[in-house]
Length: 218
Image 1 (tube, rainbow, N blue to C red):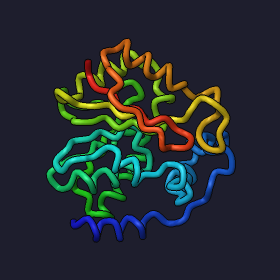
Image 2 (cartoon, rainbow, N blue to C red):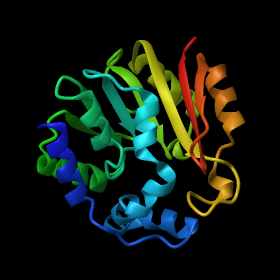
Image 3 (spheres, one colour):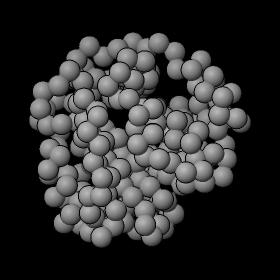
């Protein structure tokens, strides 16, 4: 699968979708898989999520192994797969059987043999020890309970020198994302990671509604 061909296929599969009108409606769509997938893949999302800029900032390498925690519809999973190439691997990790089924269908449609799906419980990403170069967690960290225990599992999954990438919404009222009361402030994320053996090594500030943090093991 060449990069140019795959991007043509992705563009055709990501059809225009029904938009959740408010941030509260977006989160209510979790109970309606088809509507939620449509909202996640809405082309309007690109305007604030800036996937091309995010991937460029990560400076991904061929052959990397990345776990996309909370992969959802695969909005980032298949884009990441393009950058790591056939010698790399993307673990698309999610707790929803409906999302995993959708991801499996998408992987077949795109011929993305380097995308491996994992259906997991909420408290464990089920990744092998020292198996991934990066953990990519977008718009998901605020959903995770018992974060200290979860961070312990993430530490075990990272290869030496590996990184954790956190992209999530600023804790304030915004036109997109979850309600403010569900969000976690950037400072709280940095403190929690620091208390659990991670150091902030980079912060990108080009996203209009989200913080973009990169951590490595101390």
